[in-house]
Length: 319
Image (cartoon, rainbow, N blue to C red; front, side):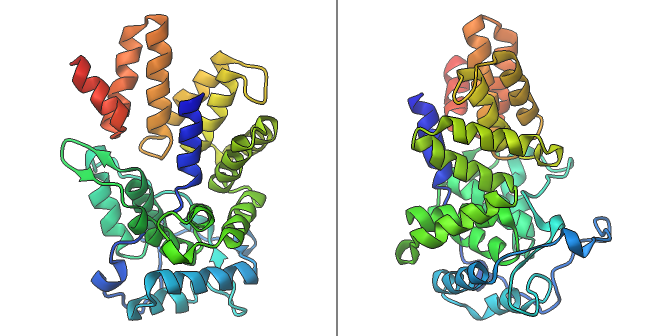
């Protein structure tokens, strides 16, 4: 229970920095576009328009956090993600984490995401921010925890309409982790609440984590379940991890170990999405307790390959 609470608090604080993206990257003035392989016609009705007050406050805070470098101008002024009134547009193709191509090893995902993030892809910026918050170790890369860098990457992604990054940035603003004097509890809560209100899984995760920290397990479980019932939201591994945990441990609902473990396996299948490593680690523990060491080792290897520190040490100690 205590470990779960610590995890929730960590995710509620993924609230976090953007190494010198703006000083090291010379953005040009063409608009952010998807590659020709990803180009799809998008109904304008599917584009979520962020409320003007949140849009303005996020832009103002991002300027303060990033120091308003000259190269940030191409993000702030691009009509790709700002409408005529100045509200941030949240395009459906720019949501969530960046998918990792099958040609890129999981152990090298940070380098790949960082390259794409420097090209202004908001999904990649969100992915880099998550890795910098959690840190991970692989056979070829080691990413140290850097809350300040993480917060700045999430700020950049939020400016481009990534609702997941907006929710995470809201967490940063709420707790002050990685944002220093830019801490703004009210704005942070508004970002989280709005993201959750439109069904964004990261917003739901953050709101649910706050509810659980206040012992409102029934409310959190209801949020997770309602979001999960929309099949399009089942691509968020952390949502699946949270829901599975509640089911297995009977938090806010009658416990159902079988369904909870199935949902955790679905989360693992989404690797390297955030939350997949925790699902693999907890499945390792579940199977170990039952004495099924073959399956336990399978999930330990996955969690360790994804860079979860506890899993890396466990595999090292056990050979």
